[in-house]
Structures are given as C-alpha cells and as structure tokens.
Image (cartoon, rainbow over all chains, first blue to last red; front, top):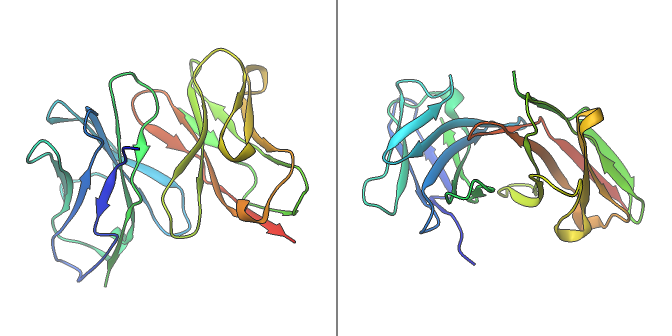
Length: 113
Length: 111
C-alpha cells in the first residue's frame, strides 16, 4: 500500500541552526501539507502546497519557514534558524485531487537544544 | 470560525467496556469529518471519515462514528474496548483544504 514517507524520524539540532525535514508523498498525489504537534498538544496546520506554490499557510508559518518540492518527488520543510519552541513532531501529508482524505506520514520529531 | 472541540481530555475504561468519545464541530456548511488515532510516539492513523450520505460510518478496528447535524457532533464509538485501543484520539474537520484538529482525548484501558 502506498504511503507517505518522512525522514529523518528524529532530528536533534542546536538553536539557530537550519533544518530541513523531508517527505516523499504518495506518487500520484498533487496536494501536500505540513502539520506540527508540540508535545502534548493538538495537531496544527502549517502550510498547504499545490501546483508548486503555497495555497494556504497559518500564522505559525512565518518567514523562518519555507517549503519546496525540489525534484518532483520530495516535499521539504525548511526552518531557517530554529528556536526552542520549534521542538515538535512535524507531519507531512498528501492527497490526490479527489478531495478525499489526506494521508499522513509517521512524522519527524524535531528537538531543538 | 471553524473549530473542532473534544470535551474530554482523558477517558479511562475497562477492557471489554463500551466507549464513546465526543466531538463537536463548528462549521458553516457540512464539513468533512475524520477520526484519527495516535499511539505513543507514532503517526496519525485514519480510523474513519464522513463526507456525506449515511450518517453512521464504519471504520477500522471495530470503530464507528455517527454524524448528527442537529447536535453538531461526530462521536466515535466502540462496543467493546481492547487494551490495544489505548492511545490518543483526534477528531478533525475539513472545511477549506486544511484539517482542523481537536485537542485530542487520551484513552486509557484497564484490564
């Protein structure tokens, strides 16, 4: 069964460093998303991406964040200068154009120290 | 504003007992509604979804949910809980293209 794959599963980084979280969406999907979940809290929408551009972003998704689909298969989330409060589980999701459910990856746990 | 509310933060049941997890939504139109389960340290697994049609939807692992427009609810039920059902359960709604999650209900199951 096709699935969304995220790497790495866990990343530890120092405050101020740049991190790139990687996702391989399901191959025929066209809509891509990043969500995050701070430990013990609910899952929050960050950004949606379609047709090589951001279609919607939340207030959390400030200038420190960017997304890219560099090669037609990967979908990345970059945090330019990490802060302690960026520590969270980051989930990638994708869906096809039938407007049904999005499929989630297993997440990347980001720890900023 | 669109929102999803899960009134119960933590629920404890005995194995074999029935379960109902509450979810209320606030949307202008009929939303797409979902229930996800998250085991500790794991990702989000879709249990079931409601888009339209029959208001009682069946999901995986023996779960079902009923959409009640009059109560703005989409409660998750299971007739007999297993110890492996212990996890965090999230209700989510989709109005525009993004999912809006509730705060989650942590289910604890006692033997």
